[in-house]
Image (cartoon, rainbow, N blue to C red; front, side, top):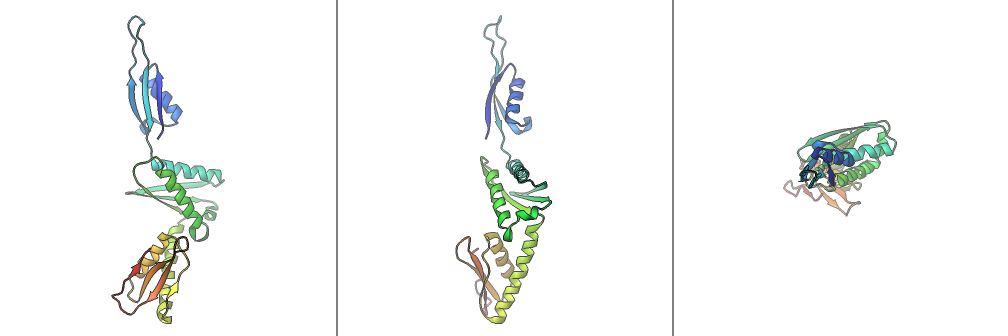
Length: 215
């Protein structure tokens, strides 16, 4: 939170000066008049206006501004779209060669998302969960994981043994768990610790068995 106390001849003059120093606009600040101006009597007792101006934190603006500045510093020309749904904020980057920022299995993208979340959460009281995507990668990755989950489940049934998938972040493990919990021939569980925590697909006979354990 940024706050300034400014003194000027008039209240509006003090507010204008504060807005310039905070590099913001009137609708993005709270203003408290600490002292009203007075001309005094016969020139005696005259006083200037003093106001306290506090910049209102906007986590969505902070996140978008940070992301645009970061892309500019990395020499990427991009567009950033933002959509808010409840406490979830979905941001997507589009532009030339931005696919390089996805990384192996989205690891670089996950790191960028964490940075955005950290910046947005700093000095902000209301909780928002930020989801970052690049050129629709998240949706494509989800479909890939769903197909992988079913393919491994089928192999597990045919070969009658469990299969251990490659390590995945929590949100990807959740996709696999949710995909396979609809089946009555396999169950899943997570093993290990991050960042090497993985999903294990296990064939079952008893359909009343526990569907999944852990994320």
